[in-house]
Length: 422
Ligand SMILES: O=C(O)[C@H]1O[C@H](OP(=O)(O)OP(=O)(O)OC[C@H]2O[C@@H](n3ccc(=O)[nH]c3=O)[C@H](O)[C@@H]2O)[C@H](O)[C@@H](O)[C@H]1O
Image (cartoon, rainbow, N blue to C red):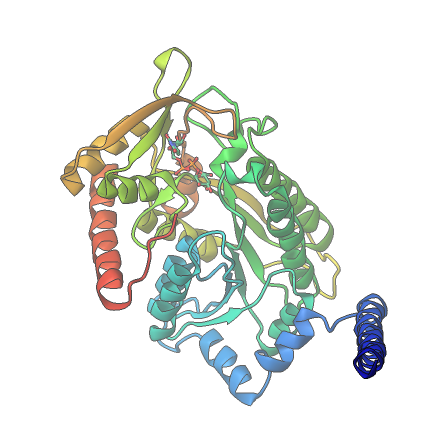
């Protein structure tokens, strides 16, 4: 009996306990839900600005980095904001500008589209050369405002973008976010800056889409893009026209043709072919209908850098102020290619020779995922305007790439087991 009573009493207490525990549990959940619904979380930008983008030290670093050397080799004394500075082209262009004495501030969001540790390594390289790279997004208006309040940039080299033609089918939003919204965000801040900087930005050879007439000239049609990537770059060129027309921004678009070289992008074929050949993994080589070879006008990074600097140096000043245009401003688009397309099969043969490893070739029909059959640049306009003349053939350029690749990744595995990305 006693036992029963005890147990009854014990049972009641357990019931009461579990009841109040449940009450506490559900009220916590309820409070959390209310909090999530009715409290807007602090914006990431303000969070960041408190932590990373303020303080005298931060401002000093920005200003120092932006300041051109008085004995600048170019004699131009540019102060350039380079977006996408920890990217492949961004790193090389930033270094070249800094080395000749121009001021450079880098901006990069270090996203994980490909191995961010490669971007961090590039950042280290830049910081060793005196280029401060700010971690932030081109869509962060508050950060851009802060930067433009601190520095009177003479130029913006806008290279931040979502790259890759095939990835657009997996993640279309990121192309709209970076290549459309991000571009508008950059134009908006430049539009209200006083004085307005001149802008040079990365368009793409992919705007030529399904065109069949070669070589591709800037005057050719660009209304048949084969990928969303290409479509966002084409849209960017139209948006550039609008900002030039309404606000007097001086804008130059550069159509890059399959840029490769040391510190390159791991999502590009020459890069992951190298990785896979070394690992003994098979590589897919695309071919066109009737076994037609697919070819690209592969362009070495040093040639592209020269083109970027040429475009910056010949960019005229913007003509607007206070958000209003005073008179017509410069609007240009240039092809920056190598002018000699090479079949992808030949690219693979060169890699085999340099790596001394036979590739396991898996020939596949070109998937309908954004790729085009061939690209080929006519660069006569860039040659005329700023003496652009590509000098590096594919074999010479790949040799330099392979040298860097082996050095970078063998050091990585030995010293800090850095993984090569895919
Ligand atoms: O000029 C540009 O505007 C673009 O250049 C670059 O695009 P692409 O020219 O397509 O380079 P990339 O992917 O290296 O493929 C190279 C070749 O390998 C073939 N390819 C590719 C993958 C594969 O598995 N097999 C294969 O044969 C493939 O069919 C192609 O023929 C940039 O990535 C892009 O961001 C943009 O800047």
